[in-house]
Image (cartoon, rainbow, N blue to C red; front, side, top):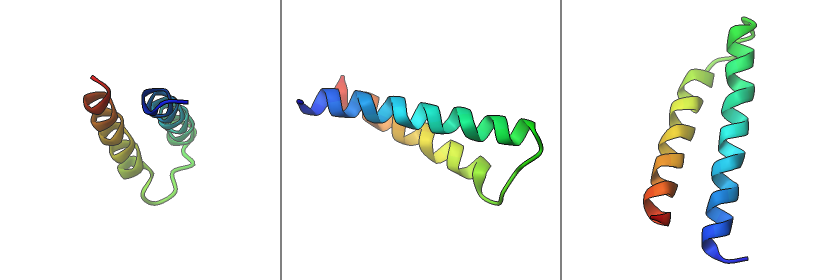
Length: 53
């Protein structure tokens, strides 16, 4: 597996985590720090995309 494939898989994983966090927020199960975690995940996904391309 080359580095680009690994980074793409990591972006998919972060996206799945954000989906789960958004569902929890919508269901009013908001643990502390989850909105910030979504922002951090999106930032990481942007950095990965810049690295790939």
